[in-house]
Amino acid sequence: MGAEMPSIAEAPGELAPERVLAVVRVFDRLIAGSASLDDVLAAAAREGECLAGMSTADGRNHRAVDGTGEWSATRPEERRGALLADGTEVWVAGCCLPEAHVELVVERLWVAAGVALRQARDPRPVIDPTTALEVVLSASADEVERARALRVLELSPARQVVVAAYDGPPSTDADLLSALPAETVLRAGRIGSRLALVLAGPPDSELPIPRRGRMGFGSAYDWHELPRAWHQARVALRYALRSSHGGPQRAFTEATIVDFADLGAWAILAEHLPVERLRLAYHPDVAALDRLVEQAGGDDMRCTLETVAATGSIRQAAAVLHLHHNSVAHRVARAEAELGFQIGVPYGRSRLLVALIIQRLRDNV
Image 1 (cartoon, helix red, strand yellow):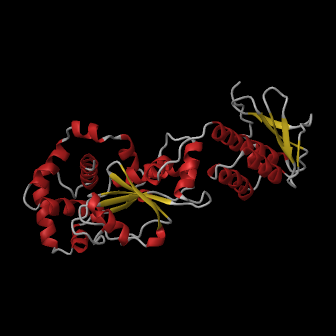
Image 2 (cartoon, rainbow, N blue to C red; image 1 turned 90 degrees about the horizontal axis):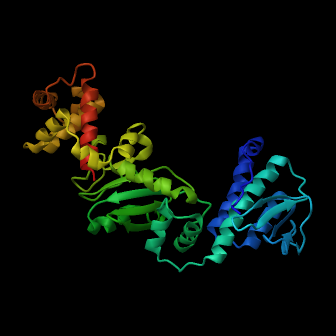
């Protein structure tokens, strides 16, 4: 018999959001802490202010606990329950709290009890911290694996964290870590060619990024959403540019450190346009940018064009770049001759910006 999840599609909405969150966190912490089935039942009894128990699939064995922690071998006729994958029933009875609250407790009991039983029947070897970090960030790991890995990393399940991805020579990892406040770095380790960092909060925009390095980071999430946080960090990384000097960003166009939240709809391009497809696709605007970058002073030209596209004004771009207005105007005129269109006309700046974004996503492997 397959697991039957209790239906509470409408019930939680009747509870105050903070109460729903409090109940969910209780059971999430149990899962993250690899709690036993008895611990899960005891928590359900406390949260539901009722009797909570389990009955084996053959109906021969029953075990229940009340809100005071007293155990008994009983199964009331009137109970609210749900079946786990192996046919075990978990249930609550004698609840005096509102229906919506009881339904929420049963749903979370079903989830946490299922994890506890799988963990008890499928013991897995202890893993090292580097592997554990990869597990908690992996979208393919199940809750049992992620809970074990979280314990290895000694990360609190109740704490929201920020995940960052750093791409740079491995020899610069130590430089980056030393530049971050020690109390903010909870865990760090190489996953493939990237350095994954679990941080207590978002990195400072003035963080000095080592030369030839770049960084992206996502929003703060709870432990069970760390794969999403890692995904966001890698998407942001595709928009980051490598540091040319090893210090803090001197202008926003350097983009050595990128926050996923700042990307807005641009994130969709990075999520759905793989590098392989971009490399196979040809567009004259991007090809013209490639020719400009290959010429002498190509990096300065690209930086100038990105600043003009971002500010919408040659004078504003000159101020950002600390250049004379005529110097920027000369570069723009040279670029327009290669591109074959004027940047200052309606939609010209948008056309340039799209070409620059496509070029960046293609080149940022």
